[in-house]
Image (cartoon, rainbow, N blue to C red):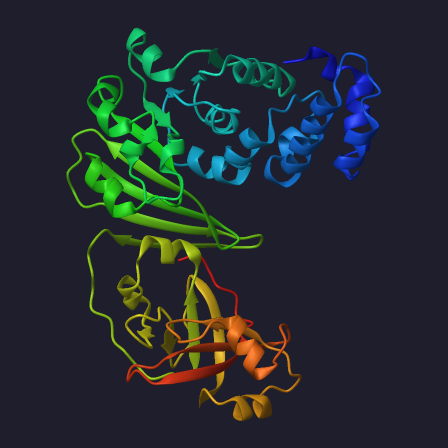
Length: 396
């Protein structure tokens, strides 16, 4: 950590070059004797990434940023605030503190908060930034969280964000493939708390993770603007009842919630396209709650399409459309029905990709019409020509 980066003239330079071409800045070199151009570029790049992901940090003077990888891997303020609403009590310890975003939000609901980070430089950065943010009741421990925990007593909650080992890159991975290895240390962790909150990558398989763990009470699938960002597992000591799967898609104007019990597969009806079409949001798709949507009084078009329909409008956690036409996949027919030669396309359980269809039909992207290329309940290829509904989706 180079304290010279915090000098006013250096901070002004960083702020003035947030919209500059970093490669050109690298070519020119650093105007400061004690701060390299690489350090400046790293601060500029990290601060740019923080503008929307970490607005509190971005807007606070004298913040010191780590490398861009730490910024990429850290929770956003939106997801950190969501996690803070899942926990309560007097004390919490974050065993994998990182850049400290989650710990910062935990400090809003706990009196005693401990941040553990094995990287001593990152730990110093976090301590400095907490001072700038006027946070005084977070205890900073520059040490591996698992090795530090046995020296402490009990906490109301323990939080972990295990990182995926490098040797699993590109593979389906399990919790045991992460550091720290939570399943291997679960018994020890429950000696110090009755409540665990574990954050993992959206790439992790939910069923495999539940099988690896004990006492899972809830699984939260958290999406932001229809992109899954985090999987959260809430563990409560000696809990043996059914696991509740909770999904949320946090949008700019509304949040979509949908909950169901894990592996409780209700029967869902299949139907030909009716008046309305529904496409589930990314959180529901990740959670695999395809049949559970039956409780919303919708029917599926096809077992493998994951598109839904109804005669009357329903509040649905995803996108909603009015079906204007249902036609077979025919290039000439489509051209007649597309008013401006522009349309938004989606394929579900279809033989061709969107790129292949655009090449064949010459229909450009855009416009107010939405085309869904899929199969109906009788395995026939069909195209649904739709327009978006203007009805606002409420929180379920």
